[in-house]
Length: 334
Length: 285
Image 1 (cartoon, helix red, strand yellow):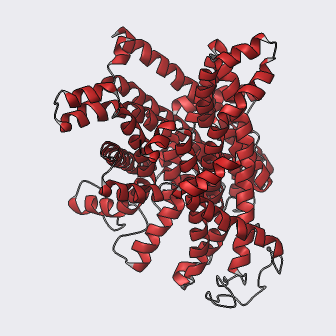
Image 2: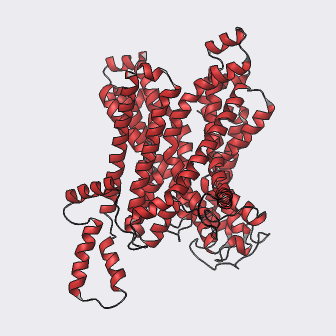
Image 3: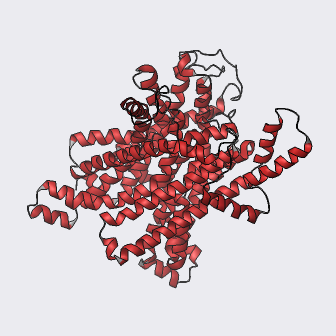
């Protein structure tokens, strides 16, 4: 158990390091921006009519406090941290005065649902197919599957998404291509609403799955085909262990370990892909929020979403990392 | 080197296909230097002409010949990818070789930094930067930023090879005969990692071009400068699919898919060539 604690402590250190770097980076980028959120809000407010200069000055002061752009660089930096810890990113500019955090928490379930589902499907399907293809190297069927999966792999998220959109939206319109659920339905745990969410999520999820499968397939296949020639596998085969057991217990289990690490490493990229997919399918998640924020020039929203997603990805990576000892008992021994 | 290439072309079907696809794209890029009119010009030809003998790939609603537009876009997009790949290669090689050779605490610190950078999601950070810089975000700035974000995975690969080189006989010989660390890394170790560098360059190109296409499609780059993503951006802005001008979307998409599959096949076949086990399997052993 001691080894496990050391392992978790190390991972936690890495997690803290990633979060600090990411938040600092986001702060620095935003700080040296020519866009001043205070002046932007002011011009928004004052454009509705004449306001006397004194109240503008008072407004400016309170806006500065609101956005945390008061004081020196160091002061602002620590202020930013205290805001991040409290989850307070100030009010959104385009939906003034709704807090950014409220908007994010509204979009969050969509992104988490879409990403979790698509990532798990891609990981499981890709690794299963890859393991089978690696174990039965000479199978004709698996060669065809491999060719197909590998042709999909290098194609960027946007192209796959757009292709699916054109095929299922224009040429053969059977699936909804825009939004998260049917608009005239009341959100809740009703049958109609849930089926609608599934229907609307199919194409975005399919895009992410198609893009994701290839990488897992290729690395799993090469891992498995290397392990198959290992002594312990040959010994088990000669000893008459059934090929099903050899495949699942001797080969696939060992090959899975680097794939779990790979899953943690790839999450950042997966999130990037989700931003694009949400934009294409107009899916009401974090990614779409960010793009919309940029279009609207919404400073606090963009900064909030960036900071939030850096932290969220780090948390997800950390969670995957600490489940690793469950499948690799060697970590526990330290 | 040439012999290896010749053998690869002769015996490796993936390498041949990859070379072919990339050559077609390069041919289009070369053609861009002979364009009959300025690539930024709009309404140079009759708008909305379908592909035919006069306009090979049709024309778009902005009155641009798709072929010449594609040629210029491919050139710019490829240029972006190559700049990113080159800069990030230099960083990856330097970090990987030094970290692997020096080892110890230095290696641990460098790798901790490496992994931290690698764990940050690129797209949100790039989007924030684009948002902040707005019009100052020219393509060289974007290329530099992408290069600074995109080397971490490859430096780890290079490091793993450098670590095994460190304990080899010839490294000790070199060190004892008085070569400086820099010399050992450049003259003795660099040649060994070159195949990996080539392999990762292809993947990095794919990643960088994908990034550029993504940002341009969202409209977050200089949209007047023709790029592959920019072509799709304009097609979307004019609702090309709804208007039935399918070739406006299809041409850049097919071209970029050709490029990606070509690069991917090259990377795959070279990777297979590097790995002696798969080379043996290919020979039927």
